[in-house]
Length: 258
Ligand SMILES: [Zn+2]
Picture (spheres, rainbow, N blue to C red):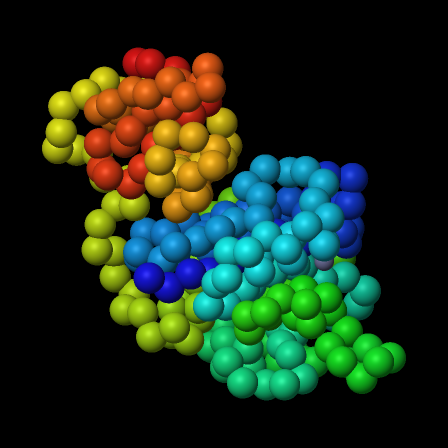
């Protein structure tokens, strides 16, 4: 199964760029939309965070390398005088550059102009951005639009518009990984088996391969939706529920029975 690491730039006390919009908020919406689109198409996604919060760059890069994805995408938005999309890839080129090109193609299709593919070299002669330099997989940094440019900001000032950007990034990823852009099944399909239903009460809930935090996270539920539990297990005082879909186990303390 293909694996993709998605990261919203900035967060918490680090707002990123500001102007008509706050960059960290827009980044998060785009990253979540990108992750959801990929999950629906059977891609194994790790979203570095699904809520607003502080996140160290070193921790993020470690999480990415531990996950060992095929590619990594960081979502940013721009400021400082300009208009349009741009995307950074490694000076090495290769798959990262191909990914940047495929994302740019999708971004142009949704009506955003592109300032092009870019690289940035640090004083050591290597890639300037740690997210590109220190991640082991091909990685890109997308700058969707300028939050301090009125016309650009108006293209990304609603949830629906951010979703359009995030999904364009996802389609660029799919093309790069040769994955057909069709929804084969809901990532957490729970329409068949009997059990009891719970509503997820947190913005991001890990689905693990077994009942316990030592099991690998296979997916993240981002929709605060309703799911069906068909088995319960208590491990170290924590109640876990097995999803009917077979997707894995969730911590029941982040849900309420309905
Ligand atoms: Zn940024």
